[in-house]
Length: 165
Image (cartoon, rainbow, N blue to C red; front, side, top):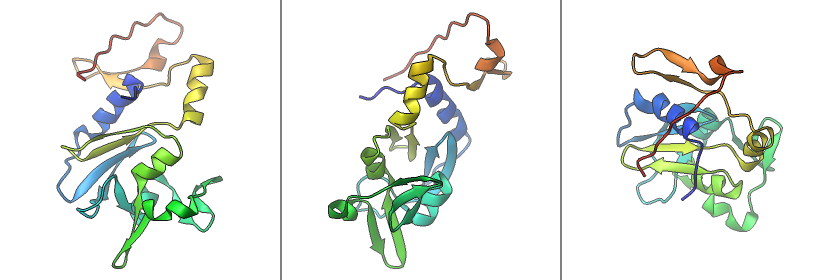
């Protein structure tokens, strides 16, 4: 099982706690932003979303040179194109989970609640490892008051975490 920074996971769970997922939609958390997207065809495996939802949730668009966002562009292997893109009627679907595997981006899903979380790509993660600086996050205490990690810069901090898995 892949391990993810627990703080990021806690932020992600807080972000979707207020959003209800129905049988006809999923919640995709990408770059820390939760977006409700249309459900994929029932016979598919992985997370297939419309190209419109792909742009809304991730800011990636499909271009002739590959899947692109700003100056970043990832070419799709021509022999495997059907694993990433399919057309059902007038709707074009994109397999975001397969794309994440291609670009070595960690992800985790809660199938019961229809939630997909996509973590930072390896290139983004290495910045944390080389600086040994934890990314900032904000969480409420038991009384509901919000606290950010940056509030404690220069002070010693003990983070106590746990996971149920």
